[in-house]
Image (tube, rainbow, N blue to C red; front, side, top):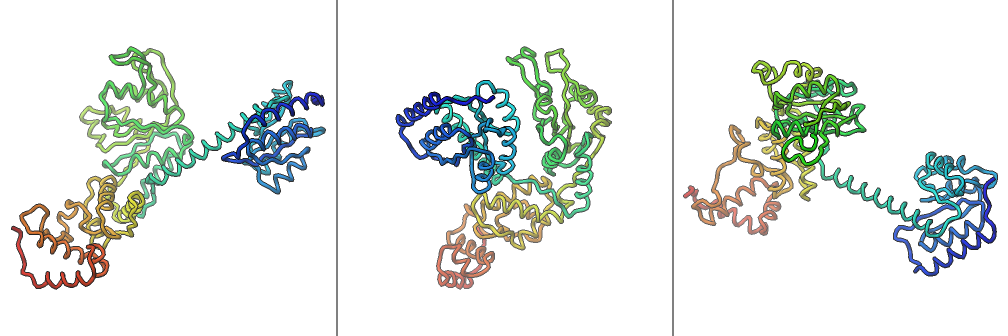
Length: 486
């Protein structure tokens, strides 16, 4: 039978709550909650009201399940205190019904000391905490305080995630180029399988971005995506980075180290520039791929790791095979699904769309409302070969956004190397620092601004002068003789 509290016990609790509340300075909570109290004992409900309202929260008390459901259907509550013994009702059965009405409700259960197991079962069904009966006002304050703190942390995490999302250029793998679409179709068809995937392509073509997208589309998506850059470390350090090491394995190994393989267990291990992996480490990687086994450096114990491997290279692995720099058995193990990623120069239909995405991203970062590229700038972007691929395009657009003085990107905002062999090459004009007069520099600057600005009014605004002054200077420039650089 559920324990009922005597009048004396209830009065003692009530008196204790009044004492604590009167010695506290009542204040409005910074984040007031609406709290539902579900208990069939009126004195318990009164105590809870005193404690919670002294903390600055709003409360509603009910004595049965039907009334609790009605309150939740008609109003919004943040927290509910639920007695597991509601007369003839079982609070365990009521709990999922309350959560069904309000899935965001955080339920704290009341339970007698003799029924802690029942409280654990209630938490399994969705409760977030429990308070034993008889309880003190301080226990109520602590459990509510924990929930408020947890809410603040969740809100902070959501805010940080939103900031990161705003400050991070998200991947866009849409394409209008058949070669790129074919590569993506092949890669994502293999993503749902355990097959090893090898991404082939020049530096800067987006292999890392595609690898991460494959992980997010795979059965391993809920586990870690771990990257190892093969060219960045010496053979000894790369082996330790991959597999970890035991303390004392080499000079400087003062503690055990967990390797990237262990961190990626259950997830995806991305080996960037696999063609640079030293020959001595390749047999150990092959063993991991085939048997899911490895040893840490300086340790004889065999460990197991279930990792899905995606690798990438900008090297010709077949040539490396012929030269003896890459093992053929590892090559064939990595080459199960090989995906060639076309360079940017072979994706002319995608180029401007990608450049526009970069422009929008960096415009937001720099607080500049740029609307796009001028016709001349677009022509230069199309004609350039982009040896650095997407990485180079991103850097060029970021630089242009920083330098732009108008509401769009013009020729003069782009690096000079883009104009080599281009019909859009701007006239050299005078150069800052050359042996020229201030008048020549002013003339050159005004002339260029007038060419780029859509109207004379806009040109005057950029130059910081009135429209009449600009017309006067334009006439002076037209009358002046052509001056060669000194």
